[in-house]
Amino acid sequence: MIMKNLLLVEDDPEATRLLEIYLSSESYRLVCCGTGGEAISKLNVLTFDLIILDISLPDISGFEICKHLRDDGCTIPIIMLTSRSEETDKVLALDIGADDYVTKPFGTLEFMSRINALLRRSEQTRIEANDQNQEISYKELVINTNKRKVTLRGKRLELTHKEFDLLVLLATHPGRTFNRYEILELVWGNTFEGYANTISTHINRLRNKLEADISDPKYILTSWGAGYRFSE
Image (cartoon, rainbow, N blue to C red; front, side):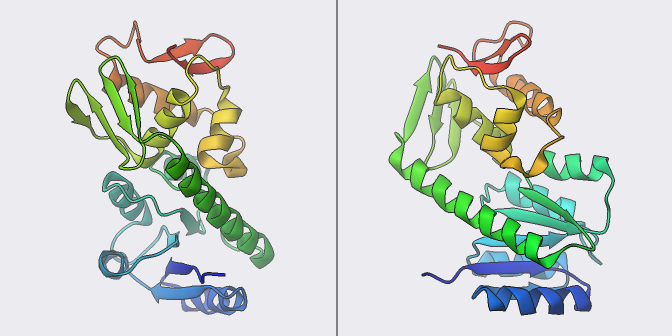
């Protein structure tokens, strides 16, 4: 089995030592850093399979780092690790592209299970992307699934990590209606059960980028009372 490389961005020495013990017992290769600047430097030169990212860092907020990575096209799974348990923080983490959100103190067995599940899902997504057609075209929209690139009328659209995944899910199943919980499970995994309202936020953002007239959408349609679908 190929050893997975994990980046831990955490300024609490006790939490770092605890995770080092458990992750090494699972045969993961762990790289640790205590600041956001150090994390970005390591990401520029090393390859990682998963990032464990604390929100409250001494220099850069974990939210800022996560958003920067997703805006830059980074697809590495990210687990936000924090002592903040407010629902607004969890929803924000989800909106900017985090794959999971774990609140301190946490159970190590459950945390390890979440890491393993994210890594399995990431690998499956990579395999499925390689099996899919490289391009999806509809009207003036072109989606390149391998390059994670979307163009509309010949101009590239800047989509966040999750906006792209949501668009690909709908576009690869034209005409099929997905309800919010199906979208949440298929795009984010089932970790964020209970935060399905964020789907509306992502749909609205996508429509603002795709549609000439959001009051009369041509690509992403609403199935009233049921969910959302891509045009046939």
